[in-house]
Image (cartoon, rainbow, N blue to C red):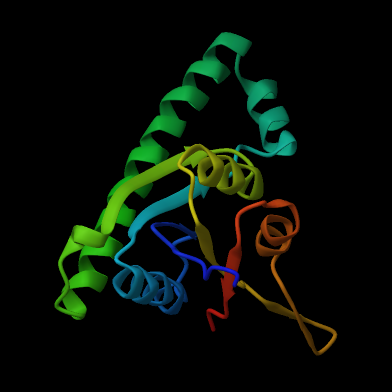
Length: 163
């Protein structure tokens, strides 16, 4: 008889958008049900090549790299605090302890690649992320991150509608 999945580590990936609460609540519900821990992740996308070209036009290469590095760290720190505040508010609104939330990461990179990388590194049993659907010609389409993660991840993925 095949064994049922046993989720002990859940990776919750968020863009911290306005519709992320249902996604976090799904991850939290599963963590409570399976007595699992949640790893929270937010990925900051790197500066686009067009923006990099504008910065490089007005600054020397050394200045541009220093400004980018310093500002990136400030953005990562700010987003980590937003992630903590979001988690605390959600847990308080449901009168829950934070014992299910084990770690929080804010990293820079391509979201789908970073989500898969963190899931593998921490041996997540499940990835939970929002659908981030938008309407194109009257039809809903999944966001590119959820599509890529569900396509390329070897870890099971739960895509939760977040609207």
